[in-house]
Image (cartoon, rainbow, N blue to C red; front, side):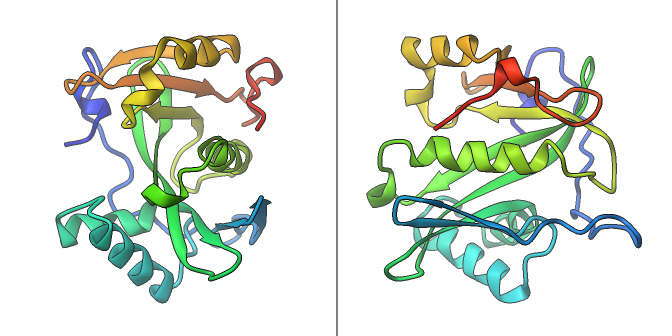
Length: 203
């Protein structure tokens, strides 16, 4: 069940299903990579190869991030960034988004991230989130205009008072909790698809 569908007052409308490839004539996703220390963040949104999708599915199952192989296969179509170590090129994390319609905000990206435990180093999580957001805020999704990126705090450390103040300081909008008690924070995009500068997060 989608986490946003569990939010009080949020409809259950899902837009993504199987994430489509860009329509003919649409701007292709940029084939870009970012670096953070000894990690490479590869953008594969809506253009992951069959091999990359299989690698992601196996990674989730091996790390027990997901238990259902069918759900893991479905989620491979939602991957934004694949995170690899420079020294081994081993996959150590991914970020994903699913399109969801909120009653008062239109379509948003519901953001999730998983990093392998031994690679949860300081600020890597923030670097992956920022890189995902920076790409998505200017990406013309072929299915619907997108109003922002909704962060589900599946890591409960992100619900600590200091982190809540961090989100508030960077103008993220608190959108309540899921039925599991996880906080939801929205990073709004403006009409042009650009995150308001006052809401910028920097590593």
